[in-house]
Image (cartoon, rainbow, N blue to C red; front, side, top):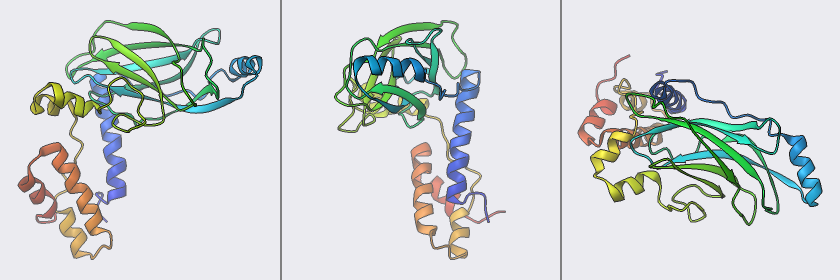
Length: 248
């Protein structure tokens, strides 16, 4: 069985991407915390006569030149409790969910968070450290809480059921980071910001799948071809890699 079986490849791809980003930023990712100051949050909820809802944390990066490492703190506890954190690559678009944050089912003012972050490019981590306090913005119903990074150290806190590009996305920029980048820069500039995650060592894997009469061969090869084209935009190259001679 080749290691490029689609389930193993997806796991390998995500692992390699995380390792790549961590190496670029120069430190290990901050693991989201599951302790969200439940006792303090419950006290606030009881005072307000309202129930709380547990939501996920996530992040989005609209910068094409810098990645971000951040930690998010709940200011309702003393000392502030870390409730999330991650490394976000250039043009990163959500999906790295962290658990969990407690939000009241009915929004109320005064829910305070503190964000601490630094930034890096492909060569270095910048020495500047940024700290900013936020109040959770008004929402109609609890949903995932996003930390959204923009150029020039601008940051937004968003409570949203959908991610960028989805009709339910509540961020001020509606497009995905990739779409937003293409609207303001040449494609080659945006392409340089995205890490290549297709494994070019998967030589002849589709040839192998076909020879073994794998029932999922077509679906797997479509997914692999799609990823290769995203990374390299060269159809002949991708076909040669996937459908060339299989080498163990």
